[in-house]
Image (cartoon, rainbow, N blue to C red):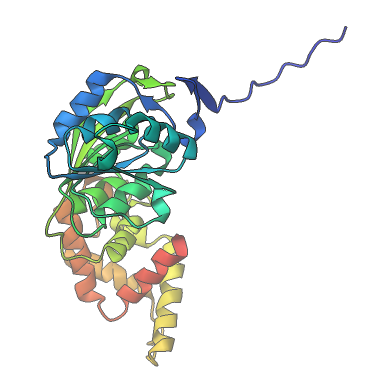
Length: 317
């Protein structure tokens, strides 16, 4: 009899718990430890008058506990099977009237009004959801969110840390972020492959007077190679070519003559040198450094750099 060929076993995408088949590939890991659930609710400091937004309620372990303490919970769930389980859990109880369920992709829908957000998020939507949340108006009080451990540590990373990145600086521009507690994988069913952490995010109100899209364009350039100087970052051929191309479009649209032998890189290097940022490195720059860097560049390049930067941002999305 011929030997069977050895091959890699396919990665398991689903797990069964409580009679339900969960799709772990879609981030369905139910928080089962009541001590962790209670700790999250305590740290959220919920009020009787609160409207709470929850994303990915699963079977409702966290939802039911919150319903006992607040005015209303708006639970957003993409899986109709879990919507049914959540509805059955509160059906016929006094909690049913306090629960509103929205079915669909939270990233593709407008957020409702809410006072606080408490959620065990599907980890693959962590980054887009955080910024959707922070750019939401009107302001909410705080968010208590479960993330993959590494992502959580990037959110709270400080200058000089290996994990300090564009995510860190952008989040900390818009909010105060605190790491609250670690949560081991065995607290979930089925257990994920990674460790988790709970983070508190409190939006800054009022926010800094900065256009976030333009800010992100500058930060993106700085963090392409965060160990390089800003001078070197702007000398990158890709950045240089794109900014030069966009500047020429800007001049064409505004009937502006381009000086002979004009090089946008030389202009930017002059600005960086004059403002003292030429030898700065993104890895060691804090929020205040980046804000001064942002406004310094805009003060010198007000006539054309804003346009170039917006086109750069669109080109790299």
